Image 1 (tube, each protein chain N blue to C red):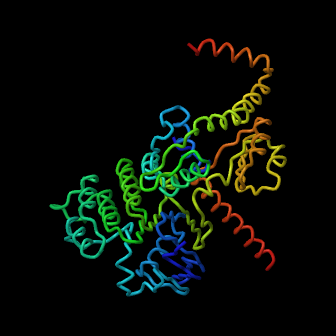
Image 2 (image 1 turned 60 degrees about the vertical axis):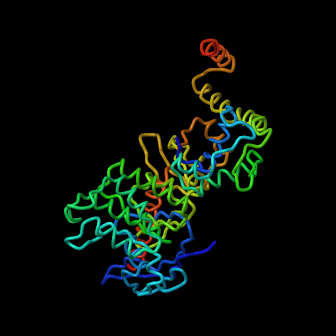
Image 3 (image 1 turned 30 degrees about the vertical axis):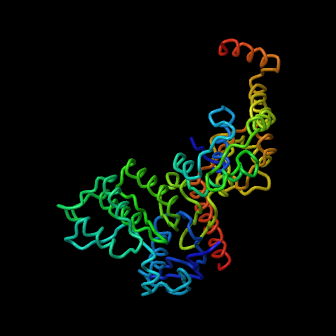
Length: 122
Length: 306
């Protein structure tokens, strides 16, 4: 679950973001605490705290004194925007690179994507 | 940041061998440290000196701002779980836990009982001498955790513990640390197994500190790149290569220095495989690299002498 080579606190922040994006953590609901995250991912609590603080700085979470961390209103929409922007870099670029190696052009790729989508989507 | 331990120019010599070579470092309060290094690197010597169980040849050690030697006020705030802790011949685990309870002011009996259960440790009927290696380790782990000392040293605490018992140890360590933050110094060979627990890493190699950093800072510090031998230069220019392996025309290099997203894009476009380097690999590579460089410079010196 935890992968090597990337800063752990980024991975922790991303796991919370994923939960917000897929709707399992709704806006204004309480986010997992630093200690819960540390115990679940089996990581140092200071590292988990760094990930949570990053989300607070980004305005994804906010702190209610004495109660805990909560998901900020509008967080999901903003995260979706951010992920869509990063999508090309993260997924399309490597896809194109591998396709070039195999002699597949953009048109071939489009056809492949359409074929696959037809099979997997209900 | 408060420092609970400060070490300056510490050296320990045994006859002709230098076990610890002019080492200086400090330990931050309430942080989990990994003290990592090969066998004989000097880990146990450093921990013994910090806990006043061994004498320094030279240099100063301060724990909570004071000298630890014969200083009860400092010693009762520290717990050192040795890899090969000796107990009296006729002592049972129950005796050992009672002794610890008397000695450590923050001892938590409830936690100790819970851990005895977790590790299925037989408390009486058998002396510690007759315990298996794993059960002996469990005694140390239980004392180390339940003592809740402000500084706890675990020297290879898991010898003989199976994977399940080690996971229990890591889980209990994390949850108790979360509720009762304190300074933990864990020496270990199983680097990948403990790396996520560590807030900071101290790597010691042949008596010297070669790395003293936050674990998260180190994590994306190096990368493995698999590249055509002819193109190595183009992709590693300006970076320090700490390891290189070749198979035919393919070369796998480990480079230091964080890759920017531009670097990654360039490498992805060229179809290179870029793989992360685990903390364990990085430490192995770094100590090997240091050894090679040490070897080179000493042979140069020899050459100069001739």
